[in-house]
Length: 228
Image (cartoon, rainbow, N blue to C red; front, side):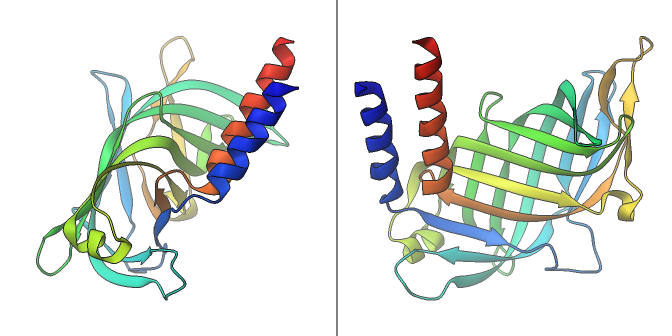
């Protein structure tokens, strides 16, 4: 009983915490993909990077009731994906990859640092959706990552420096809707994804968002009940 009370209390506490949010839409530049990938045969990892760099309109919401601040920004991405396992879900397959790397935003005009996120293996995954052999879309998501907030963004949200947070990239239109084939080794096991271009949208928060943190607390509650 005390465990349930503590978990519910944690959700209520987190739900009222201040959390600045950031986002960009997938149609910032409709003429260009957002991300691309290639497969590293030496490490059996799929690397996802930006287009060198990718232009975005970064929206920053300090959650103070005022309209979001828009900043023209360049996005840089460097993610390494390592295959974990696949699961059939309602007629499609979910292929799970662990993820390490980082992403960064800089001012598109001055190149001044805006913010960055650093992702360790235990903090984020790619859930790629498609068939048993092809990936059509995906979601890169992570919790409790480390953000570094620069002075420009800090001036909008009221704080700068190192903070925990969460993030998500929604990846669509792989290879202009044709999808990307999964790479198999000589034993027929999945080891990666064939090179692709993709569109992406992004959302994230500095300090865990109420929804994400609440869900994690609820999962902890369920786990505690199962142990009993």
